[in-house]
Image (cartoon, rainbow, N blue to C red; front, side):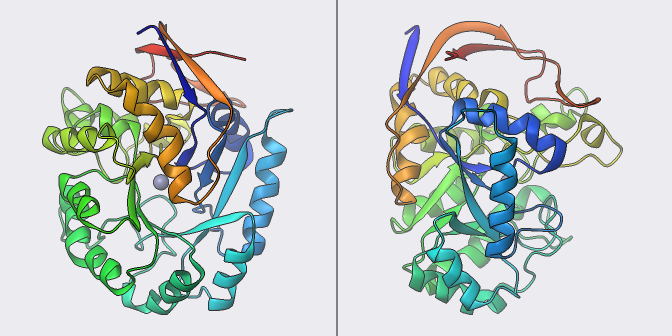
Length: 345
Ligand SMILES: [Zn+2]
């Protein structure tokens, strides 16, 4: 197969930051995707409907001229979030979900939640107004091994949330383990998962073998090959519970190549091409459209896109970096070859 045409995909988990980085990265996402769920972990975080409206405006201003890209906004769940604010969010056309970060789990998650039971009244309101909950599914206790944090969260907290709120739509974001995949498979159709390109492309050797590779470091951290195989199987199975969410999370190169480097892989520049590589490896290119362009829209109860995109089988080399004023962002697979290329319009 040398050419692949798909309904235009959406990205159901995206970080675009703000300021100068936003200008660089939003153009990349807008070239590929029709819509994206925009993560609220700015500093300060997007915690009110008004914050989300302001951030939405900032994103629209940063978009290239004539872009039809639609940012789908989210709120950051804190224990202070009022039930009125949840209802206001549900009524807003701009806001499509609320994101739960366990405190300290990842970039700018310090104001996240430490005691999950404390937010149960908020989850009850979300369930009533049918506003989806997006979960960064990792425990954060320092005594839990970093490679086990998702598994432990699934067994403890996630199980409890799903049991207590059976009608709440939940996306287990960026699943990285077989345990998380199995949990989602066994749950009702109110529970789905997004999967990133890096967790499909790499196992943990890509971070640690032969030298530390900070640009492959993200949270939840990339796991063993056994987990990667489970993720590939889920993503390419045609099961609508699993859909595309890049978790593209840009940091300046200096913040990644650092004695305490930031977590996050930058994949937005070629997200759909990166997924196509994986689907091709397992002879499942016919399953890419469901995963990338259909299942997420259906889960979020949004119309499917009507435009299409075309990918060509064509080798090209990923740039070493993308410019942000006088600084740079280093993309995932910098300097390596990719086999698919999105046709430019
Ligand atoms: Zn994320």
